[in-house]
Every structure is written in structure tokens, then in C-alpha cells.
Image: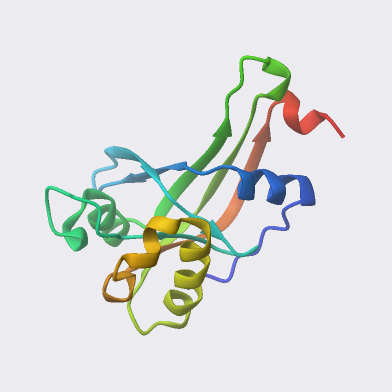
Length: 150
């Protein structure tokens, strides 16, 4: 996997851990974007998102996001929070390199307990049999009044 390292602040890490869903943007070989909501876990260095057993129209390994990652490794991950109290608005936009960790890979083994601890639904899914998307952050943009509060 890539070796980039972004040092997130404690406030940013807390925000990342409190949110339950993110949006993953990838693009195909021609640059056409795809955006999907994902479940994720973060270990302070990498973001992980499983190819899970939720119903899908195609085999998990043939999903558009998987094909896009295989064609181009650039990805963006948007983690955001909306509130009617606009003083609580905020987002982190993470640009990075997306790769697929296959079963047996060391990052795949790291990802599974993190994902299962975060989402009870993954306790009963055979995540060991499917790749995990691993995103290595390269740049981060932080926005919102939420982050201006200290």
C-alpha cells in the first residue's frame, strides 16, 4: 500500500469516528466519476471500507467502485455532518490513493476487527472472503464552523 501519512488533529479524528457514513468518489479510466455512500473504519493512518454481503446487483468484485479503483487509484472520501444549527456544520474531504486489500493481506486482517467493532451488522458477514478498500490519505481539506470551535 502507499506510504503517505497525514497527521489528523484530535478534533478531526473525533469527528471521523463520530460519523457513521462517508461518500467515496472514484472515477473510471475515462475520468467519469462515481459517488457512493460507504461504511468505513479508520485506524489513524488508513480508511477501510469492506465489500460486504449487502444485496448488490453484481458480484462485489465487479462493482463500479472496484473497477474504478483498479483503473485509477485516485479517490476522494467526504465525511460530513449536517445540522439545522449551522454552527455544527463541518466536513473533511480526504484525497488519497485507493487500493484493494485481498483476503490474506495484512491490512485486510487489520481492517476486519475495526469494521466489526464499528458496525454490528458486520459481525455475521463473511468479510474474510472479500477484498477491503483501503484509502491512504494524501491531502485533507477541513471546512465548517464546527472546526473553528475550539
